[in-house]
Image (cartoon, rainbow over all chains, first blue to last red):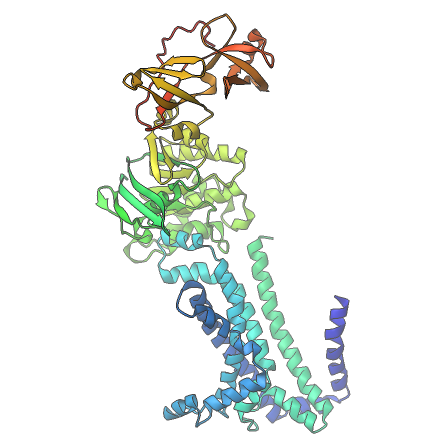
Length: 257
Length: 368
């Protein structure tokens, strides 16, 4: 426990110490310049949109994998893990090739007037791609363990399919969905490799916060990089804390303590 | 509601769960489906509920065909073995569920739902626990919530799957009485599944004994216990000695014991099984009455009763006698005694048809 804490906490405290070398004004200038602010908006906003999308899509994928039997189900089940296993740069290159104006999907999207690659939309698409397995893999086992009895009880009491889903199934899988959301969100927020290729990295438009950190590092501006990192860390931590507390509250209520 | 089950068949993956089951259930009757696991009793209950559908055959509710009516439209109250309470809802919301999901003309106002739920909770003696969650209740309380929830939709029939199975012995007995009283009060048609013969005989108006997907016998508890129709029913209900015997010209031979079996007067030579309840086996000292000689092998004292294990020829059998009789006989292990069955029933090996009771007037000079 202590060792684990050490491994995690030492780098984090080093980060804070680094940025502590700045004066307040310098910190504000480094961490909240307009260009950096735009990158926060894209990173947090994109991660949020991607995570929300993944919660819905992931639930559908998990539902189909658990409830239906179809040819190649095992294969599809294995494919879900691909974004986990793929080196992020490979994913980034592949996504860029796919969504570029000359790519298969990019061409199709462009024909209906949507430009995906090198725009914020591309960033969100990449974030969706890498976040999906987190939702599927947290929800799937919970769906699997749901007992038929509860659904049968609800139907015998007159509930229709939608009511069974909203009143009985959804509350049971909600904690898993929230966990999946938090994981997908956190991953999308920190993702670098698979996003920067498709992003195009236009200042103020499609630059993500991790890229800003790398840019500062390349300019040997370590203090500026750690200032941005500190802001991201605090924000991410606050969001995860809220999610975890909500989970905890929900569970204690059910356990009846 | 009257239920008529006609020639129902059901197989699960090639395994026949029910074969040619027919049964009529009268309005207001409380019926127990009794049998070992795998006997098809739960399948039959689920078919009644509309949770399963038969491969062939019909289920009629009040004369109307309900075979393919879904569980949602069937209006049955189903109580699951493990209660299946919604654990994220309070007791109140659980009981109200069937009313809150109702749409259309039958929909009740919030006040009406509240009134009915409170009334039901009073009825199942859980008035003060409306705001609790299922995890905060004991097993018996959860069972009663499940019952109240099923009754909330005013079902035409109440179906219960092993209603007392998951409870400890004391609570089970209490809840059994309570369910019986509740049934007498509401006069609702009820069917419950159990593997516990005592439970079935104690609570039900009629007991249906099932085995291997078939109905072995259906009758009142007295009928079932006193005149079992098949060897299976004999063995499943209560303790019984089953003894190999030979039947010839209306006489059964069990070792050195000869008994009249008048129903088999026409049978020339057949192997059979004789069933004798331990409390129907009379014991007397050698030379003091009729019967066959047997050896006392073991004596165990069970409260007011004494169980004596006896050896008749090569067959072991059990007798239950009173403490007083035990003292009179002064039984010791290894002692020879005379045994006489007050009542016995014979089944031929080849068929289970035809039975015979020993004439109760058979002179026995040492009735207990």
